Image (cartoon, rainbow, N blue to C red):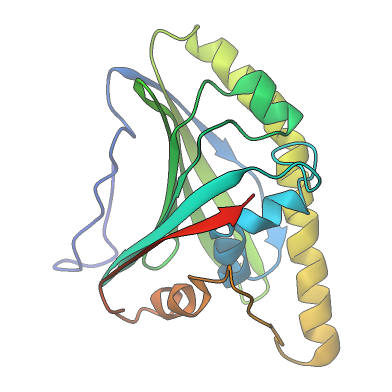
Length: 224
């Protein structure tokens, strides 16, 4: 069930397969983290961080693969689309994930992120995460994991996903806390942008409740 904070508010995003009867679902509350919600959004939307923070688990920094990255945006959302001809090289991806052709990660203003992994037969996994700010320096991630029925019992998929993602979640949590430590040490954020930073400024605008310019960009060739 989706709710509004007030009547007549903006249209709610289409949840897609989340809640669909022909899919399995489970929720995962991950407690309160030390870090800024904005930084958590930028982290999950940035595919390049996986080669460093999750090196060996999701991707490998010394065995990158070619991908094509595109960006689509509406007034109150932005999405990163990655097309790749082969699976990621990390051990978790190779052990747990079915064949993948494409992944799509979309931010719905201000703090809802939905990531979808798609293979030759369609959706393989959908993760919907609410990055709820608790204070200016803490947040509470709350996620729904959705998989098509028929690929093993739901309880077994839930156990496997939780087991493999525990380490990934811990690494992201640690990185956000360290990032906040540096922000506080220097008195303010001092970020630099590289050629792969295609979303950063617009993510901040959406988080602040602003509208952005609709756009279609790419595809761009990268290695992940």
